[in-house]
Length: 394
Image (spheres, rainbow, N blue to C red):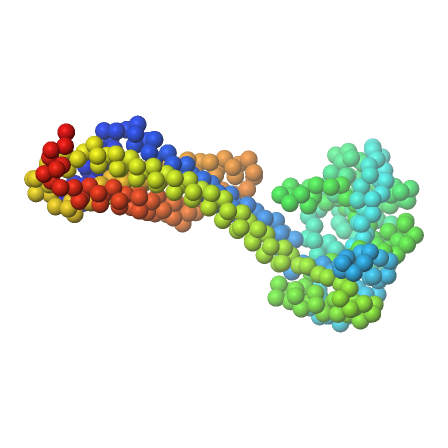
């Protein structure tokens, strides 16, 4: 009996017991569906996360105080002169900006709001790659001239001035007047980076409003992705020498954040895939049990076939192909449901549905492997039946 005949007999046997075959494949269907959805969510989420980070630039880095040494960032940990020295002595650093965070009461013509006010310099726009709805970021010239300017994010601008263009209007920051020179375009972020209401002002203006000199961290960008680590290390050494505090500064880069995100999403995908794998294993056991029942039910049929000349290999192949067919049919159903489920998740999560051909191929081969593995024992048992004893069975 050739392969096609065995396949035809397997299909006929499955069709003769439709409900039983369907219930048998449920474990395989659920497992394959879960594997595809999990892999698609993992790949799609990772792609969205990496895209979000790359939008800020893979050569971005920050330097901050080693909080384990004591109180954390204090006045004097960073200075304006540090930035000039680092930019002069570290050629790998392209842009560098002080960053200071303060909560201030902000008032416009149509409303007022408590908002996070960030003091930076003109390099910050280049570091963060801001996208503007109106206007522009303040420049080094604005800082040197002591211009009291501010850039608002779009959400805060709407709260303070309504939906019109507020560029040129005056805003009050803790009672101090500033002119709006730009509004950042609102962008949805899966990381929530654009969720809070923020205003950006020159660092020199922050000092004059609060009355004290304080920089929470330095943010910069290297000239290339390959220069990031060298730029961070050389900048930290300069700070340690200037402030006489070895080991006082730490750093992180967007590249390190991307690697950490990849590692975390990879572990999560692996864990959930393992759980889905357990479902496949349970489904495989169900297939083996049903095939054993099938062997028992068809003992007389096996005896007749052996009496007519079927050899052990024919019987083994017939039942093995039947087990593989059950699992493959379940795998195909799982692939269809998994693709649909992954597309729905991607639609609601607003990220791309990355169900690759490789994922589908792996799911298909895995389902066939489950049928092969769990079908061996029942098929082998059927092929070893004694023809005379089999014919006696009712």
